[in-house]
Length: 410
Length: 115
Image (cartoon, each protein chain N blue to C red):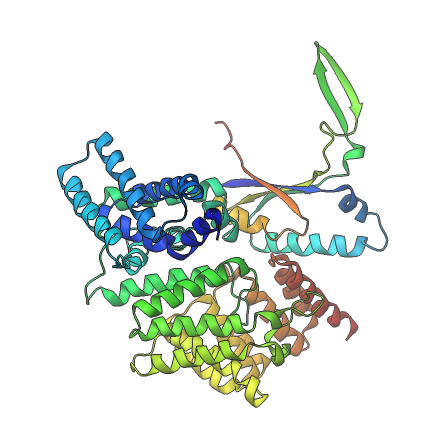
């Protein structure tokens, strides 16, 4: 393995662990990231000459620590910081000297990123950057945000962590459920931000789906007994298992009900089912377990050939009680329409306030579909037009145009 | 806040406006987008523009105003139309821009009117 590859592989395998460990010990996230970036640059210069060290992580940790010490001396930081730095320096030496692995502090990092003092809109980007090392430009494109604005938000969040002295600690028992919710929300936002279509899957964020699942698996490993963590992982795995079926060979969008089940990835669906089962053992239902259960019922079609809409409608009733998001309300209307007819579905849609759906594409796509079934062709055409106008993705737009075109031929 | 969405089109996209085979799809794409924007109640003003070859450009050079046919800059993509929308922030403006039917759009914040 050449030195350049070694640097890249080490970065991929342990960037998050190194940043988390440095940041938790030094209590300055931005400084920890800068120091580690310098250490990686130093590795690129040194390793090709001197060879890849036996323990590359320990080498990087020592190099980053030295940068922090130098930076601290120059800035003449407060006594307490120097003390914590010297403790860390000793520890880093210990890890370099012995075979001991340095502690995994990424769970603390995930909770820090979703801290109540951190603006909700920057929590997911912060996680993607600190735990996975993604750069601001890539995160910005994935969330359709101006890259320089994204960079500023990340910088401000890190300054806030330092200046407000936010704790790099796990929350106490009484705080935990709420804080964990924020962590789960942030990871889920990486999986399917922007809009959830009626199927509950967002096909646009392909770039970040893998990263979100990585974070979900990491969280599940660090908190195996939390049912909602397992629920979130099950939800993402079920959606991910259908990725290849969401497009036909020409790249056109295929809705869930028309997907070729032989393209669904069974091992991934089975993994999702195992997560759901282990979640159920805790006997504490929650939003993500319910969303995963809905996807699990859809997944049963791979074995039974049919979709149990009544079961799905029932699960949506529960979900709406836990988390009455627009996505859940629209999903419930879709399920009810399958069970009790288009009229029943439409009356649920109609009850959603207009202001909440003026730029929510799935609402209009479902409304158009239901109007068509009710033979209200004029309303259907109107709703299709809005759904098309609100679609950012070409294949979805073309799919809806074909659907709208069928009205004119009936 | 007001933001302007500037839609840039390639010569090929401009040509779709008059191509009997492409015209209908081209117009329909814009019609749906315009409807979604209007129904959301955020449009301040808007217009499509005739293609760049119909433009007249004026440029003052050495105190003399020179007039030429065509656009100011000869770039591959030219301004084809614009929307001024009233939305809370730049993120929302970009979200609307991402839904436009053509492939290149620039978003700028409008300077508030001088009082």
